[in-house]
Length: 250
Ligand SMILES: NC(=O)c1ccc[n+]([C@@H]2O[C@H](COP(=O)([O-])OP(=O)(O)OC[C@H]3O[C@@H](n4cnc5c(N)ncnc54)[C@H](O)[C@@H]3O)[C@@H](O)[C@H]2O)c1
Image (cartoon, rainbow, N blue to C red):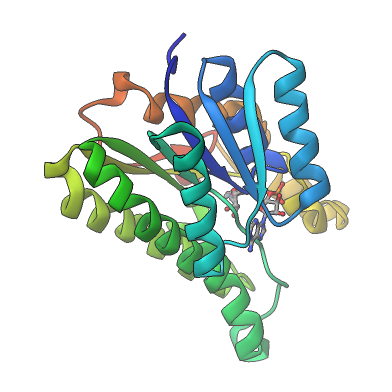
């Protein structure tokens, strides 16, 4: 088992990519704390891992709230005495609008969840990892962090920001044994893209706009998260690993 004896905290773990990553890390022996604001789905995901013989706990967490994030990481440390892995993954898409139509509140909601939420995760976990002299952090960016798209301004700005924030964190903490990387998913089959499915014509284009001509599964993204979390990735930091079926080739 690749993560035997390791402890992992996963945000946005009630659904989609976070849930798949939590399940995959638990399969490899990690004890996993699932964090999400969706209590029912989050508790359900933790119970599923437990039923499969894994070690998992759930704690209600709002990644936009500094106290909530800090308390969740303190809870993980109290349970296990160490935090080896933090997967900063919670995210929202926001409503599709042109920039001049977006209210300041709508902008804040997307930026606060997708960008500030990751900053708060890093800020809260780093003191534990500095004390331990080791740890690894993985942030969920997106193919949309690398290119423009109409009507997704704050989302792209947040995901693009994560690419450089990941490099900053890698640089600031690399000498202390902490690796920080990101993943860049393309279109992945999770509830976050439900709005896109409704427009059949648009969906046909979106769902095949990559080299492989299909959308990805959350389990395929989970494999990349697992790799970055493992010692096999010991010389990789500051990187964003695309998991996009070649979406950036388009
Ligand atoms: N699915 C895709 O096509 C795709 C592509 C690129 C990047 N992503 C990114 O992947 C990440 C996971 O998304 P997903 O596709 O699994 O979608 P999802 O909607 O299935 O999961 C997102 C999870 O984040 C949680 N969440 C939202 N706001 C939160 C908050 N403030 N605090 C705590 N939890 C919160 C939700 O409750 C949900 O469980 C997101 O960051 C998303 O932007 C997804």
